Image 1: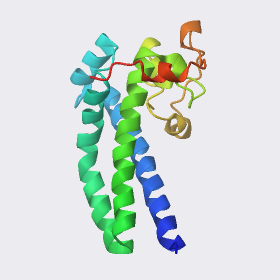
Image 2: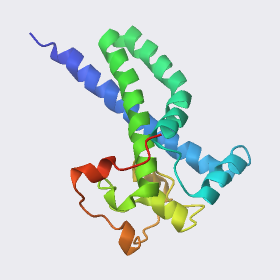
Image 3: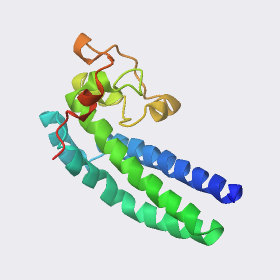
Length: 173
């Protein structure tokens, strides 16, 4: 009834897409602070210190990930079939949606960032950490590459459980 080999390959390609997405996010964000290529555009973001709204954040994550999504879809389709290829594509799409949400919530409601011990992107902005805490969706690449800086957030940004509705009270557009 179930082809466990296909289901396993789908899970692997889906998770691989999420892993690649977070890695590229970390590298690109770090490069935005290191070089002149994106520095001026990114400096404006730091000056404003706010997200654009989930939809525009999603656009900024998804459009650049589209080539990776398409290449990954084709490669995994040719290697293992349509479903693993589609799983990679869906993983890239979901990564962009989650990263857009993580970016927006850390600007507006950092205390609700329950999946990280500290809202590192919030700390990156508010602590003026130009050489630390580049992760937006996750912080493990900062930990792997030695750019994680442990700083306790101020009281208003410390993790708190909010009602479920609080997680939806962000700027969406």
